[in-house]
Length: 260
Image 1 (cartoon, rainbow, N blue to C red):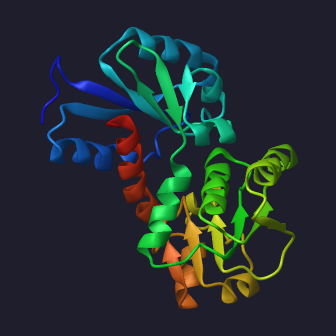
Image 2: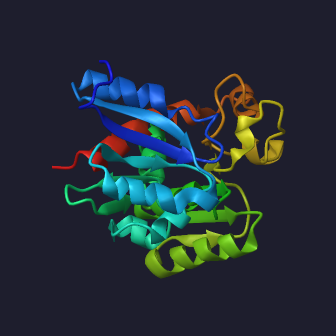
Image 3: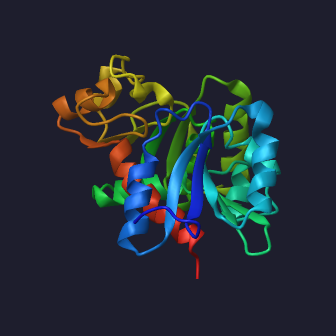
């Protein structure tokens, strides 16, 4: 499907955007569903982001946008309305432009990973889950989704103590039935940091921790490349990678973008 003057635009914004993998799968979804739309990456420094939101509101050529680092949390203050989960999280990864030019934000990272975990036939209800990068935009959304799905315990870690405290507060305020652990074996290990993008980076989880889990998730790494995923597969663990999450992310974002 070629781009014409009628084609709607769905940007993915970040800084940098060279490594984003969404456009091919999103554009394939548009094509498969007969929708005249196109996703394109836009590199926008944080200093210029306000101008982008003005453009979104001004032009009905935009369907909205997808958001990656470092704009997920700053976007929260720029939209006009929010879904309930985006309100809880204080961060966004998807914005829908309404017919009147107003912007509505959602956070689908958690939903996407939960669907990928379910697709691997791994149970979350009653499970213990350890999350590295729990204070980031994606990490916090994942923690929220895990709690909503009935995880019994979450073990939260992040290099940024302030962001980590915000995620701890989220769990304590909205999900009192999920306990916050301080260590010990976990059923599911999740690396919600960018570590997996570096094929040579050592896993953030120790061999001992991996050996005692049932499944691992690396939201940035690919099978055959991420050292974390390689380690898990060598130990015969269920391994969920960025591609698995990405497929589910397409469905989650499109469901929000083209809501009934």
